[in-house]
Length: 92
View 1 (cartoon, one colour):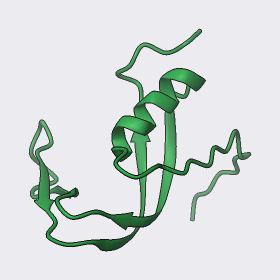
View 2 (cartoon, helix red, strand yellow):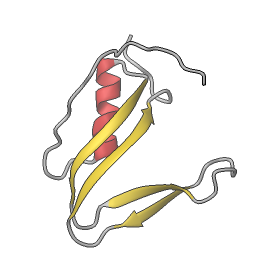
View 3 (cartoon, rainbow, N blue to C red):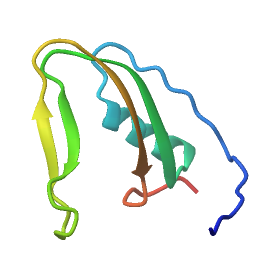
View 4 (tube, rainbow, N blue to C red):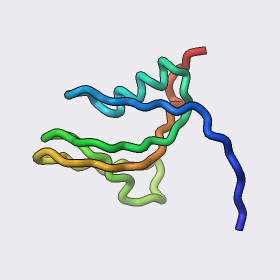
């Protein structure tokens, strides 16, 4: 077994308002706060017509092609993932 120890850095809690788009709000937070990577834990609901990213159909294909699914009706959601911000100009 191999392992390493890390220390928890900054923690941000975000509550989105009705109609806000998750990835757009996260992008704005990253730019405003100078965040270049993060771990996302999502708990809440998705409205009718929301689009859900399901991941790549084939993990070996480059560039990665994200599969998406449009949702009909309102759904509860729980998710965990990583969110890279490295493609955005960050605040100095």
